[in-house]
Image (cartoon, rainbow, N blue to C red):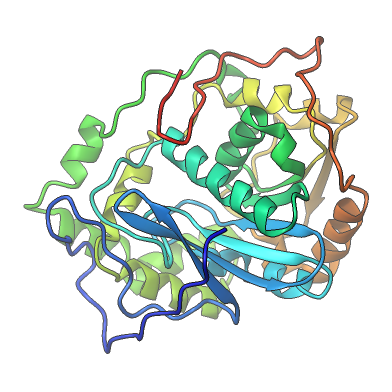
Length: 349
């Protein structure tokens, strides 16, 4: 079990966005406060750490933010606050984001799945072996789904909030994953020292962040989220994970196979406004007894925009989950596709 780590004292000011740690080194945020009152845990992660925030009591609930240029666990703050009275809630900052370490590293689908599995194993251990209910936003839903398919016994159920992989054309996202590459050509171009800092500065300026979140919300974004996103994006080494996302390599080409192979209970919640409202290929979930589908008259973050509708539905879904889940083989009518399994030491098969 990891020991809680005390928050480092914040230093005054911020650094230039995209500032680079020493070669080969990861760095921790220097001036980023906790996004909400919580106990902080640090999990060893390569040359750095992953941060888990914890509060509450009850069955475990793991929250995972989205992936974008300025992502952090602030994105799950309303769920964290609403559920800590009845759940032991954990919020994960993924590698390269929020309070977790940043810098030049291999930001790949496989590594993000490994981070989700590490967090889920840790939470289950801290909660006396109870299976973990998990919530993920947007692209991180793909990582969570793959993690749950690899190790279903870790989880009791999944909540996917405005997940990717249900938009028009998503039925073509099938087949096997390509061999992982630590860096694509586009990613190498974006992170070239000559222009990395200047390009990232434009990407994470306050107007740019507000513009992106306005598209996400389909209207005026939460001002606290805008402010925290700006702070998070102005930490040392913040550009590397962001540019990995911008390169497009974190979207799984086989995600439709992954979703269809899930046997766990899944609730898919999405908005109908804004730039991420295309769920035209989600109807197949209506034929699956383990899937629930709910749309909200909101943008991509219904937990921010309609908490009085979102939270009661979330509570009902979680309360119906089994607290003990025996390990099961994939259903014979829905065989799992070939997966590249991520092991503790990073081996992939």
